[in-house]
Length: 438
Image (cartoon, rainbow, N blue to C red; front, side, top):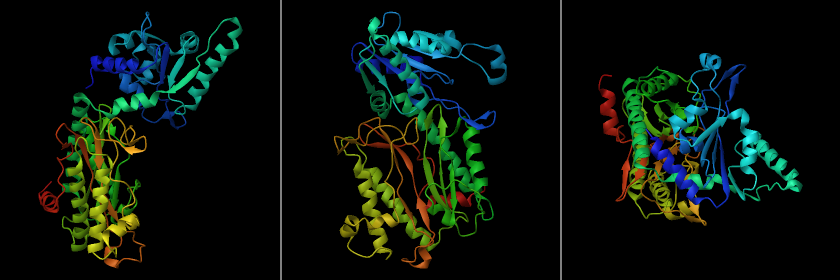
């Protein structure tokens, strides 16, 4: 887990980048109603979690570099025995200071009064506008209140600066503690995928495989799935974000499972594709081998100093050549790439940053140039081929086939590490695993 000491170091690093006489405000996530008086499971804002780890709703973190009375402050719910009986433990302001290493904490009901005084006279406000419209309006109301009192000497802040840019760049480079948590999430998720492969058989329903995967997540200590699990059998695998998971799986179908758990606020993201009956058909094998080769060549390109796009370029080259060799595409490979002919079958990029969010924060380009890989970055590599069942331009034997293979890759000082290698991905390994009794 992330220690109080590491959270404090993050806050210090952020404040060191802030201008003099400034203030940073980080609003927690709001609770969301599921139906009437029930809520979705609460998940804290990742920015607030990253800076202090406080998990409760109705929280606002304030950082004021150089403030003598305390630089790191939290507004949160007060202790309330009745509400805690119904809804669970609250840290309260005192607990926030003791348990989370903050300099001071105040009741959330006092936010407007106290924050107004903290804003007055500050030259710059660091804040992520647009994430929470209601809090945006509330904060602007406080600043307008200060402006209305300018005639009496009140000085409103003169400039807003996007806080996300600073936090996102910090979050992009993972510490050893963060990598340990992502690695653990990957290990749990890998076991879940293995479980699904071993237990699958024709006649099962997609939701039954989803249940097996998520069961493994929870018994292994994960908080929840990191995103809605995708279990697409047959032609459903051609739907990139298929989440209904209600179809019966037929003998001969490929099953595409994209699922990962969240462990201590960090995500894993794995995709595997396998035949429900345990044996790849010749057509399934031909498509699968292209995707696997594309993924392996892309991973081999990930090393410090390489630019972000090298992995995607590798997948495009391999997939285009492979589809041409099978007769699904026709033409010279470089020309097909230039024409983006592959996009009828491979319509997404090769991956994304991974961390506290599944599609994690961080710019992919700087000054319109692809950024360079650095140790501590974590990226997914997930090439795929999807041949629509309605595509009359390809031979019928290929229609409805979908394959995606995805792993989580950490950039190291000398190359990279596959954090999700615990689940097999060669055809022989998959067929062997599925032949063993569960």
